[in-house]
Length: 328
Image (cartoon, rainbow, N blue to C red; front, side, top):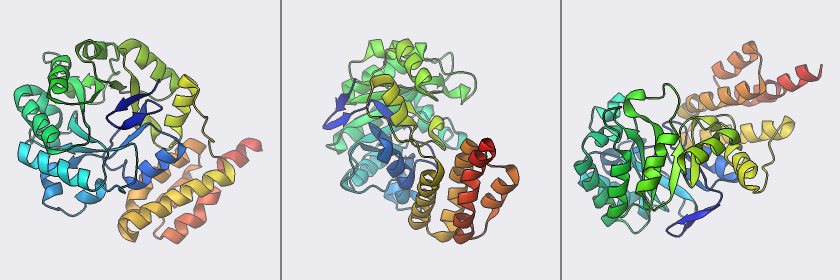
């Protein structure tokens, strides 16, 4: 059930959602290593990107030869959006995704992200500017609407397709829901009826059963998975296997899991530098330990360790302890 967006084949049709502070290059690379149709960077503020604000470009960093990758940009002014799109395309991005779904107040207060759903004419001017600025495919990620009185995703998606957008992803909530309640996958079906380009369903997809239900309810061509992948970088490949019988991932355990987590940790240290990497890595280590049920005292020791050497020394015990206790 694969499809193409420009020259990029989404095979399998399972994508990694952009998540602030999470889908950096080391994590995208790890998810890709198991198998994913598409991985998307964390959101990049377009003006800060162009003006080279420290730390912003690193979020979008991609190797020129990396396939099936997209960089997500956000903003409220056509000039900065177009310039940011040009820069990330020049640096190797195969696809540019426009963020019209972020519900965070610091984004919407700046009239970016999901706030653009309240001004669809202005939103379309940004989309048109980005499409005209780059040769790579441009995609759009948004929500059902701003609130229950502004459910305009279908109309926005239709106009976006007319402007040249080649794929749309819909999170099945309004902005005002943030992440509360349940994603309404059935409401995404209105967008499916309005567009002919590929459509991804997003929101509350934690396993293959959720993915199948989202596809059935929405009529989407594929799914985008976010929070469910935390601590389980193999999840996208597992969902693809369960739904479409693609190659099953080798889910790591024991020494293989220790090697994978240690490698991810070291990649983060190399990417961010020692001090920042030590802090950024803690959330990922916490999710890995949640998955194996690391005892609380040992978990705390790992997350409060002050040096990388101490973390790497503790990880074998932290990631095997649960298995040893279960066997006992």
